[in-house]
Image 1 (cartoon, rainbow, N blue to C red):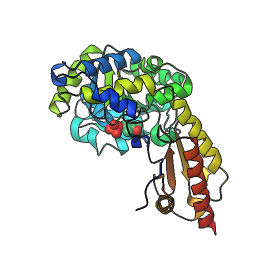
Image 2 (image 1 turned 90 degrees about the vertical axis):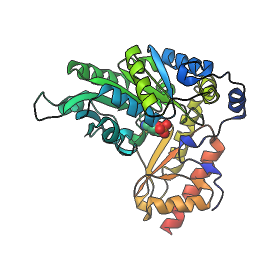
Image 3 (image 1 turned 180 degrees about the vertical axis):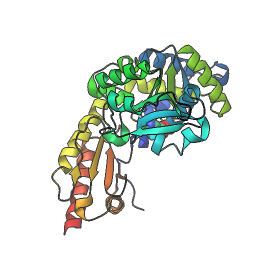
Length: 348
Ligand SMILES: *Cc1c(COP(=O)(O)O)cnc(C)c1O
């Protein structure tokens, strides 16, 4: 296989920087399971403060954050409401059904963002034969929707409506910090209407591993029980938490560059034959449809790979390019040039 020179497959493809590795190697550590790891404690305190919540817990992945939040908030047979494109529906291997035993009711939002009205219409009335609606999930940014940034106003309307019906709110904040940088809205303002939320350290923040789940004191105490049950409790986890502390200090503001690079890439491929860029590049993702080239996304993916460029084939004709700290402007320009060659080749 040709070497991958430019990897736009996902913002999970970043490597820890030398400065991050140094912070990791120098981390103070202790037994995380016993609450004795000073670096983990610093990370969880930092994230709880950033998000304006009582407390937080360090977990190995965002998927585990979502699953634990659903477990804490719901009972078996309950129903969770989420957009059709949600990660919890499509990319967690049926976790909500497996662990919490809940159903997920999908909404037809626009680019991953639904309205309070759509959400309210999905709330079940209290009936013996209906599942109980318990939890509403919003993804910030909405990944499969297009890296869409939920407007604060929409989140507030959804939350107000949810609370009126006695439902709880959970944010899948895998890319919340991208939304913060893209919108200028503070993380704690986005977080305020939510009973629980988390941020991923291993996406745009550039860490090798980890995510932090935040919420009220009782929620986090219960989340800890599930973390323990699921085997998510760790030992000298300060080594990896140090990457998170470093990233929150050094890798947040720079996300503006990723967003500019995504827009530059979108503009560079916008008028190519057979390529249709999806409306709206809010953050670090560019989705485009390649049906007009006559080739499926998997084939375009392979032809780009031959040129050392990796861009994910999302479904039959849909592709996703994601910018991150390991790709600069020069790299996205080169990647767009490769897309141009491949699109021309397909048309010819
Ligand atoms: C990546 C992602 C997750 C899962 O996070 P992991 O750390 O990969 O488990 C959840 N939700 C969204 C929107 C994601 O993009």
